[in-house]
Image 1 (cartoon, rainbow, N blue to C red):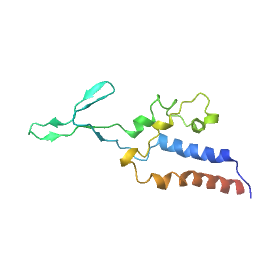
Image 2: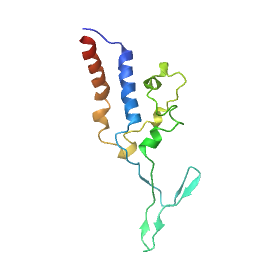
Image 3: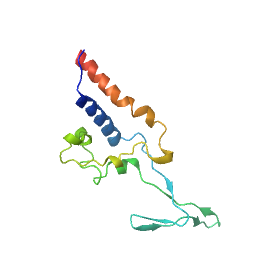
Image 4: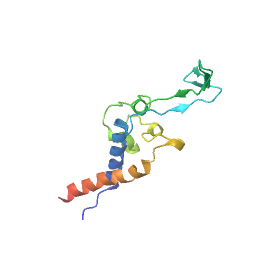
Length: 136
């Protein structure tokens, strides 16, 4: 049996992370409710609860899309390019990779319940495919 180096596993992880960054699993938005007193986002005041024309208090919802965050040049240089090396610290070179901005499953209390089912097995599937290809 042929043993693959650890770099192959790193490569598998970086490819699966990159795939999720380029094509997020959920193209939806990350809705969040502002506090009742409002808040400042990107230098602009966003009001909190707003009184509607029917005298009903409505909560203000702000959001951004996964795709926008994952393709922002402030977080990932060459955001549309397939560069798996950006995820491996020793091979990154001049590529920018803000791993804190990688949120294809969202974050916090309302994150995707499917994350634990994808994160461990995906790189293993890639490595298994490599093993099958190498053994043939």
